[in-house]
Each structure stands twice: as structure tokens, then as C-alpha cells.
Length: 293
Image (cartoon, rainbow, N blue to C red; front, side, top):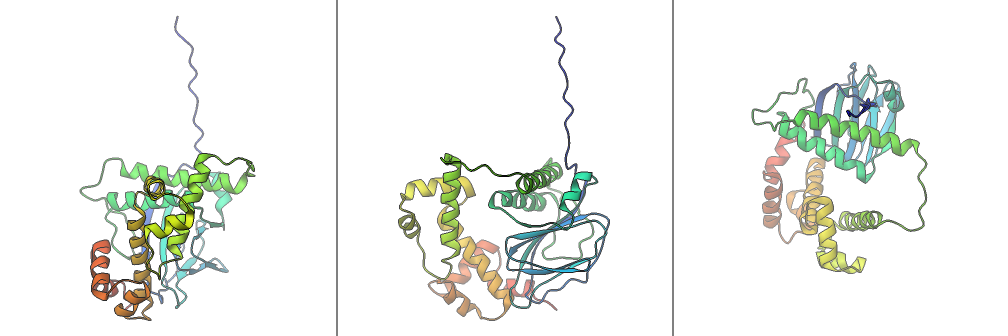
């Protein structure tokens, strides 16, 4: 006897049909765009520093960790505040679903769990398209000759998951749980590690110092942090210090020796060596690459 299976029709809440541009900018502190409007959506996220955005007739300050959705045909422009050199993630896309009305003029605080989608989009975008460094005039995505198969679809699905996650979080009342789950506890511990690292950039922090502050063994914290982030705590500390160094270079208030001292590197030569290992260029080459003409 043949079973009468029913094929369930999938409801696609946010069917992204096109990706227009993907950017991850490391801007100079004096950067300012010309402003534009277009018939597709744009999401901008301040990953480092802050940015001043114009959205129609509104002027909004996006602080680090905040994002904003520009609706289609809305005039918008972005500029640094002449004090802090910002890092911005921007993606523009086509999605004609009525559900997108939720995001019109939406400013959000990007939760840590959402950052994985942004990071995945940036990583997959660089592996799929030829994305020039710091080019705000990019009008067309060109596929890399060595692009991994399925990259475009991966970007689309990561973006759709991000949109669904934001919608869920912003519309659902969270239940208060008396007993936290193991996942909640691990996320809390990892968040504390990241907080300690980000608040200790100007000191010679060690992995042992982190473990001592949290009263957990080095083996345990190293394991959960590696599983969560893909980096060891020492690697993450180095990466975050170099990200801060890049920001300080773009702000042009200190020379390389002063930056090395401020970030507690043992000497400028070691700082330069670590900087090149992480970024692929020397501090001086990086300074020239982001300089505003």
C-alpha cells in the first residue's frame, strides 16, 4: 500500500533574491561618503568605533555594536566623527517580502549570537567575490575564479538566518529560566572572557590571568573558548590588539612606537612583526592603504 505523504510547503519569510554589495570597511577617522539612494535594502553595522549616518531627514549615531537598516529609496550617507576610526560592515540586498516592513528605519543592538552570521557573510563573501579593500564605490560583485561552490547561496542563507534571528528576538518576550542551561552558562563564560580581553588591551594580559579572574581551569576555559570562537585565547587577544592598533593608526594621533607602548607590546619591532603576521602588511603599509587623499 502506497502511503499518502503530504508535502509541506515551506514558508519563506525573508526570500533574499539578490545580493548587491558586501563591504567590510576600515575607514579613516575623517571619512565621509557622498550619500546615495537606491531601490534595495542596505544594512550597516558599526563593528568598531562609531559612525554618523543620515537616513532620510534623520541623523543617527551608531555606536560600536549597533546596526541600522536603510529601506529602499531612502537617501543615506555615512561618515566618521573625526575622532574615532570606524570599522563598518555593510551589505545591500533585494528582498521584496512584506515582512521586511519590520526593518524600516530599524536600529538594533547586535547581539553576540548574531555576529556569527555577519562574520560568516564577510568570510564567505571574500571567498566568493573579488572584494577590493576599502572601496566604497563598488557597484558590481565579480565572482572570483577560485570561488568555492555554493558560496552565493551560503551568503543568502546566512543573511536570511540573520534577519529571522533579529525578528524573533525583537518580537518575542523571552522566558525567564530559574536554572540556566549548560549552553547559557558556556555562552556567559565566553562572553566574560571576551570582556576581560577587550578591557585589558593596554596591559600584558596572560591566559593564566584570565583563568584566575574567572576561577576556572586553563584546560576548561581554553576548550570552550576554542569551540566557540575558533581561536585560542592567546590568538584572540593578539587579534583584538592588532584590530585596536589598526584603529589607532587610522586616527593618526600617535606614532607606531607610541601605539606599541600603549598596547603593551614588549618593543616596536615585535609589534611590527606581530602586526604583519596578522594583517599581511607592515604598520606603515597599512597606514598608506587607508589614508584619505
